[in-house]
Amino acid sequence: MTIADTIYQHVKALPPSKALEVLHFVEFLESKSDSTPEPAADEALAAFLHSLPVGRRSDAEINAEFQTVRDEWDQP
Image (tube, rainbow, N blue to C red; front, side, top):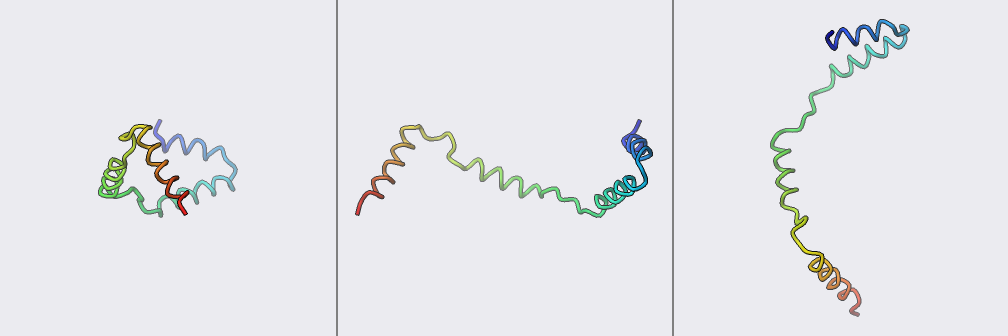
């Protein structure tokens, strides 16, 4: 059985008001533009995420950087 047949079987069992809702939803889906992101946008996002320094510093390096910032805040 195809997806269309399965949907038809389900819609056939619905009361007319609910079947009309299904029709309106299908029409909405048909009118909606295909919003798949452009491959270039995906590649740019992947490049940005790859450039982040996640996992490239040790805990000691991170703690030292935080301590430097704390020390700067404590200065008058």
